[in-house]
Length: 112
Length: 114
View (tube, rainbow over the protein chains, first blue to last red):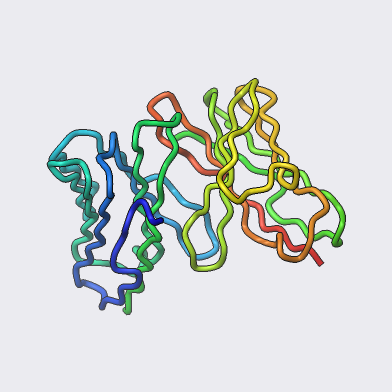
């Protein structure tokens, strides 16, 4: 079954609105990674969170890792049309040499 | 970030032929590489984990005789789709794991089997 749940599957926002995608794992993770895939492209690494309760920021993007290391979120403030794409979380359970369990992704559409 | 290349980027072949896809880590050594398959508008499906110098570990439901993986060096892994059929048409993506277990993805290979 699905190891890492990610919601929502789709999100449509007006430019300037905020956006959040959530991931939840059935098991404790050693770390969680976030990727962005533009239409027609390949996943591009955004960030890795390792510590319980960790919060990291990249300009308008804020990433959080839950205290129990089972959930994570990505929040984008004041979306821009360049934020369009699918955002994937991927959990590392620390078992097999960095094997990642990918969420199904959240496809973000930003209307100008 | 680290750079991973993948070749070819696009291939069209006839049914029954074999196709080899190369994945290279350009600026770091990767003891572990991963092969994924992605259908349109879907998530990445892990096919196998490729370990340098040993046999690949295949995910359940992935035919090892159909998808041959060879990890010949610390910077190169290859995936060969043997006797390809139209249902094998897909986007194949490799990734290489750095020492911190961050995965960096190649640009992907779009395979179309006619």
